[in-house]
Amino acid sequence: AQKITQTQPGMFVQEKEAVTLDCTYDTSDPSYGLFWYKQPSSGEMIFLIYQGSYDQQNATEGRYSLNFQKARKSANLVISASQLGDSAMYFCAMGTGNQFYFGTGTSLTVIP
Amino acid sequence: DAMVIQNPRYQVTQFGKPVTLSCSQTLNHNVMYWYQQKSSQAPKLLFHYYDKDFNNEADTPDNFQSRRPNTSFCFLDIRSPGLGDAAMYLCATSRETPDYNEQFFGPGTRLTVL
Image (tube, rainbow over all chains, first blue to last red; front, side, top):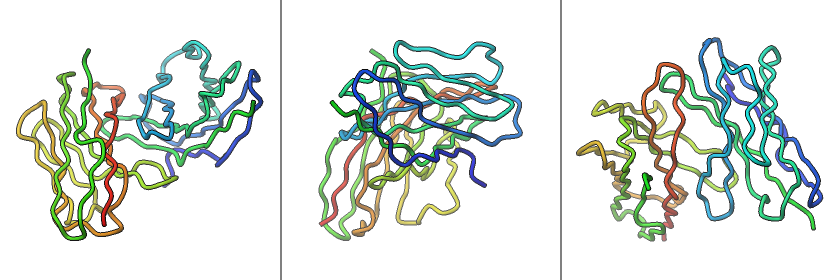
């Protein structure tokens, strides 16, 4: 069963605009963590932001924020003030116990 | 700085010639993972070690083996690489927690099979 779903294979955003990358998840575990990773063309997987299932507040890290809607099982990534360097693949992931599930990724292109 | 290191960053091998990729970590994490990632796809978990306990994914081919001689090091052995094994190989580590396990990734090894 698909654990993490990213429905946007590709997204475009104008430089300096905000963009939302969608992610929904599926689990029956009460404790889990949700993660977003950025993967530029170099291939390295760069951790961006984390949200715990018990966290009341939405996570924020600089220009990244995670819009966590537990009842809807969604964990969308919002990037504010997009920069050209944000062009990359973005993966949503969920960790629960010793299992870790990746979505299929969204390719983001920032247009000057 | 604590980190996950993968060597080499780029590896070229010939069809059928065994190759070993290495991963080391200074995070002292007890769980280590190997992923295969092909172009434009999500990383695919091959196997992971929980301390010394080896956990193989059901669909990981027998051609792929792994060794973890100690906490810091983990190796991926591809016994007879085929053209379809050309991919990025990512090593990751995590510490066991009761709730979740954030994974810390190395920079990856890009394998080319000629």
